[in-house]
Length: 252
Image (cartoon, rainbow, N blue to C red; front, side):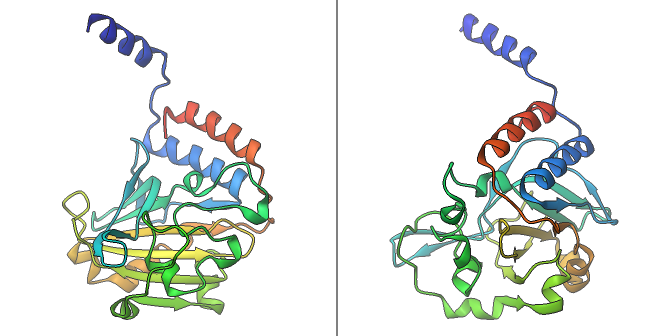
């Protein structure tokens, strides 16, 4: 036990200090822009807040009759957050590094939050907007018609207003467990642009924040932006930059 404690102390001493929220956000923003051509911004009524480590959040987990198990709808990996200055809303920024598969040809790249599709299949139907998570391999589950009323699809100028996206799905997820005991509503914003990694954004709201849902959604447009330069996937560059960023911020 003594040896274990000494080893842990030495490990902590050798590890870089965790960055503060603003420094962490800046480092991840740079990584996102340089490696994915996806810009990250903090809206004017928000402050960068997440200074711990990346994690997962699942707003809704239902029993799935087709697969005799849980259906994790809306699962997202996030690596940064921003909190509304009035404490009634919180943004979960997508953990882009987790969406990229191994060192594979660009046309066969897999983003692991959705089914094993190529990029041309992403966010083309309602399945992709709601059935995110574990448990499915090659077979699509049957779509639950009760979810249709929860989904709004945007295209044209409306989609472009969301960070230059081609298509956007806005999903009002039923929330099973309040996030941090405070946020009782979860709005998923799924953004796709041809040739770019898909973006899975979450806006968490308190009851008071949800009463202003449309205003809150409008207020976070621009927090994620598909940049103008075409994205060229470079696995080695991503891994090297990820390691460098991890050293700067302490850990993901």
